[in-house]
Image (tube, rainbow, N blue to C red; front, side):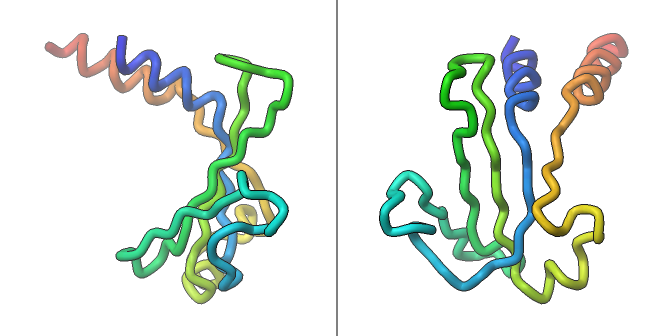
Length: 107
């Protein structure tokens, strides 16, 4: 059951790779809820930020945007063009679920 809950949670998150702009802490001083969480020991990931997108939804109807701030040079050289410019990526739980089912079947 733990895996099924985690798989369902993946449906609620959009992941966006963004270049680090050098600003830490709050993105906007008037918006304390938009805090970036620094990733101190990573040479590539500078910060992460999780934003709640759906104002009306709750529980399984909630939607989130996970922004991952990457080192500028890493972003420019390693992130494919289709993922630049704020393109959101969603993970499809069915792929993960199939892998879990196959492993369980083999046991």
